[in-house]
Image 1 (cartoon, rainbow, N blue to C red):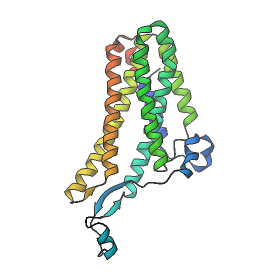
Image 2 (cartoon, rainbow, N blue to C red; image 1 turned 180 degrees about the horizontal axis):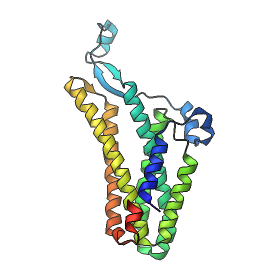
Image 3 (cartoon, helix red, strand yellow; image 1 turned 180 degrees about the vertical axis):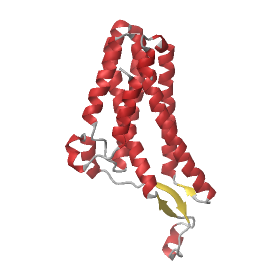
Image 4 (cartoon, rainbow, N blue to C red; image 1 turned 90 degrees about the vertical axis):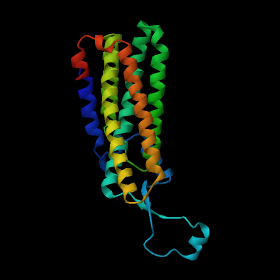
Length: 241
């Protein structure tokens, strides 16, 4: 089973906006959208095109009109958040399936498996919140993601510790690459805004910070996997390429 290639295919499927006709496949997160106040991500602040009224001047002399994201930027962020949430769901399911066989054979790995699962669950919660806040539809491919991630976790765990860790190495390498690409795009937006003399929206800065933190934690998992002999797994090349 090729863990990296399988996850790559699932990422591609998750990036597509789910059609309305398949809402029944979307988990309860989507149902919470109607109760969650919609928040539009703002890319920057720009000087108003008209003179502000006296009331606005009295309330704050430094207030600036916010510039919303362009349609292209919004489309990119919708897809990124959707893919990230689906990827973190897969990661939690992989660790859930791997942990019993691995801990049974190697009890000393219980704290490590719990630590990595807890971080993935935190990432999943973060993206659940962001999807609900910005009213982004989760992927309609949830059933496929659940089945594939659980099968991948269990099958590599029964192959042994090294195979399970090779799976972790492959998955975290793929996820880390996705986050790196997203961070580069957002930093490019920030640079363009600053070059135009615009104030960068706080939500964009926060999102960059969140993506960097989550990326670093994913790469920490990759390091743990290598330390646990991932590269000694039989069929290492098939598992990771």
